[in-house]
Image 1 (tube, one colour):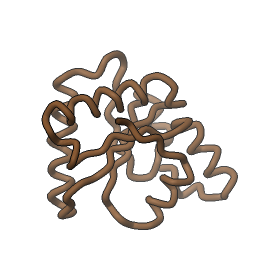
Image 2: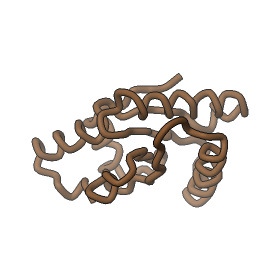
Image 3: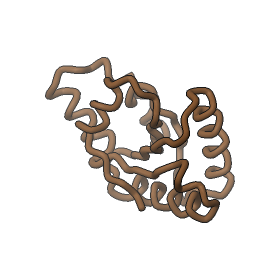
Image 4: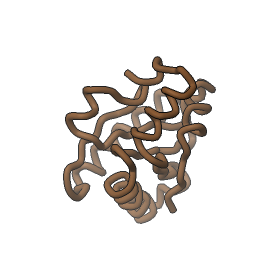
Length: 131
């Protein structure tokens, strides 16, 4: 199951300082023009591949060990999270379920994607949340 995460919820988690999640930005060139503070860039153009998922899980395992976490949320997004973000989040959820890792990793999608995040940052005056 993919959990929807609002920009407000994500902001609260980022400012809370608890590293039990990562944000995965699926955008390509747009990422370098601005992204959520601390987001990982995993550019996906079409379908997410087995290789993409394997590399992501390896990176997540290292992060989890570094921060001594038992479980963590993986929050995906693209520009608007209408297509690519939810599609990849669902594919990731299927992959972790098939590997019996759904107790370790939970898949989420940022509602309204980077567009919604940018709007929140404009409204609340928190430009430091965009790198």
